[in-house]
Length: 508
Image 1 (tube, rainbow, N blue to C red):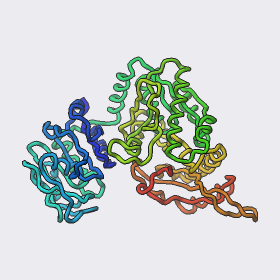
Image 2: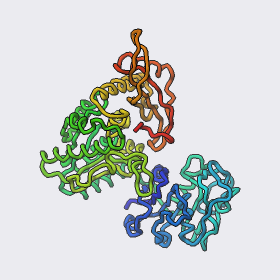
Image 3: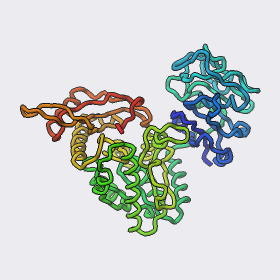
Image 4: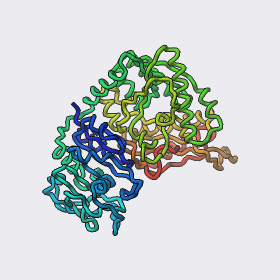
């Protein structure tokens, strides 16, 4: 049986689960209020309570099932999770007399199993205005900072541990070692989880769920849906049919490339549905980004239902949803950043028995690793991320065919020049945005009043955070010159130098 760490997500939007998986231990993310019976059903070797942008002392503070602390399963509370543990077991929580935020000196009790192998004095990452005020019975402090006498605490006999800092943060020295100590020393993990194991487990789960049924997959040609298609093909073969919907919002030449790869290389059942005019009608005069996303999601489902009727009985709809989509769309106590077309934007009655999302708990870098483990071509696995709503969320304002053609042309120049300079492997994502701004320019000795193109390029590991890419100025200059001279209706090009946060990668 696969060894599993359950991560109870309180909405902190951190990467604890990914850090655990990096150590070859499977982490299953569950909502914070998951009943203990369900938690117990996955037979976890340990439980981690995440941080949250909340006050654990408040009456409305989100809480987990108290039985997890009485189960004998090792528990590690991080930040909010540690204070919640203290409060639920009889300790106190208060607003800190002197808030510690950022890199902070900490002193560890290295006799604790949680801090084995660490130096006594290191630095950690603190980020909260609250602290534990009086430990629960049976607990003792195992780390301290200048302003926090119990920066970490434990009841070693019951294998309950709390840290008021973030071991998953890069700024915490030896933070990975702390997680290793919990996983391998306290929980007894073996570290045997790999993408090869994930393939076999996921394929078996798919076969059990699907049985003799048939599955439809929304294939966009992007990394997520492509990896999902190959995984499903491995699991159920010809009982999978992929529907490629050309909504008229794709990048230049994309529809042709998808046909060639999946019909030719993989010989997967592929239905090509050209619904571009239908999408344009539905999106006519719609400018709000959330409304655009929901219209596109709903229209996708309607097209799927119609294609499914032509195919006969089809039981399941598959989607390439990944974990960052879930986080950004809002999950439980997590704030909504932006809804994704395949998360929450779909109508309740979709016409299929169930929705299958085999990548739902994977981060983007894990999806790529999965694709490589499946033997997929590198150019597919490392393809530029592309949102399900396509260019609709890279055109600010309403959508028209002319705007799409303009953006496709500018985007292709940008992508071609980046590839020509061999920068494509160094940049996580790069694309053009057609803004709703017009500016005065000069062309042929006369005044113009045309549109502005924004170029966006970022470096990232998993898409949860990102830094703007430092593209050489001469390359940016050449890209700008080509767009201005070759793309009709554009007279100004700007480069977006905002990181995530505060911005998202996409403009909408």
